[in-house]
Image (cartoon, rainbow, N blue to C red; front, side, top):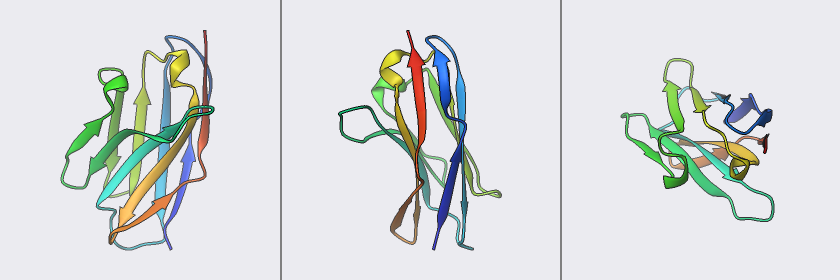
Length: 115
């Protein structure tokens, strides 16, 4: 069973930065993909960024140029550097990982951006 533990959320003013981290454990097989999703209040969960083990990276249009996803394949950890935060970025952010075609999720971490 793969466990994902997120950290780094919090409250920040608009224009500020936060860095989220997510460490995967419980499997000797490296995740083929690690990603960040978010769920704003009253809305559906949406993809923020995804990084495959081969290095392919995908971003949502709304965060391109502001957010950067990176992963440490040795530590099985994925990061999300968020710069230029906007109130619209307020959401619960979830880390996800795909291992042997099964998807796993973290418990979520709250990010609140004040105007």
